[in-house]
Length: 437
Image 1: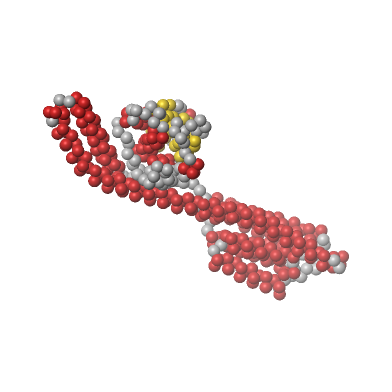
Image 2: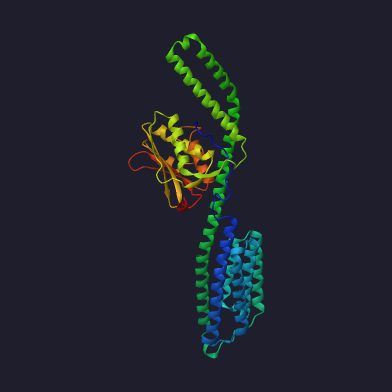
């Protein structure tokens, strides 16, 4: 059996997982919902304490109604969030809702003279982080308008006589509490929101990297297809010449020469078969080659085929617990394992090891060698296109294996062994639970 050829196929849907822009928007909305619950609780406690504890007459019914309405809106947002796609416009509306509720509470409690007027800064800063400049400007304009309105229209605070003389100290304490609240909430929520935005940006950068890698695969596939077409003619010519040589009396009479010519014919036929497989794979509909099969027979076939074409490299094959575990298999996976074995044989001519085992519901296909191992720099760049110490054009095998593993929902891992050599593993999810094998 000849070496399998890589069937270039598209990435399976859902192969990559990460915080997309939509996920980041939902996470940010979740942070705003948590902040709103804190605001509802804080407003309710402050109203009750000031009115009943300090004796400052407030329109309690109106202010508690605002807090209740804000809590009801927040409850609806909490229930809708798991089933709703969050948009940036909704984030702006959420911030405007919070600002409107704060404006009403300040209106009923002294307006711009209320020490907690500085809570507007919390809305403005969050808007500057979460919204594009145009929408953030709208939020700033609404905040400035509300502040101006509260400066001329509001319900004055009626302090009792026992607090009127100490009003300066009372307002100073209020300003201090407001400053502490704004600073603490800004640090808490901006840290969380910034982490969400960084995760989103990292995910987008990862997608761009995958797109660039897949573009490299497509270019290699086109090059391989073109090279296969070009190689067809010279291989045919060599096949005819070798057939003529075998019929020559001088060669036929020399067993050693006849055996060499026969070996050359076998290698030419193998090259022709590889070229045919490349052309077949290039014209094959995407995704049709993938199927769910038992991992054990697949690994047995790969080990037998590779050993047959590399008789001078000892292969220690340990199928382990692969058995009848079912995985998604296509020609690309066969070629990926074959490439890893080729790399290991080049690094360790004294022998290589191929093993398979079940680990945490995943199938781990491990290829080990007894060579010099990866350098720290090479280990950090394993799986990147053309990142190889062998020179230009090398390193493609690990790159292709990485993309094959990723497309099948798995991953590629590489490490240096404790004693000597390196180990590269393709870790794939099982198509069926292990207990159903």
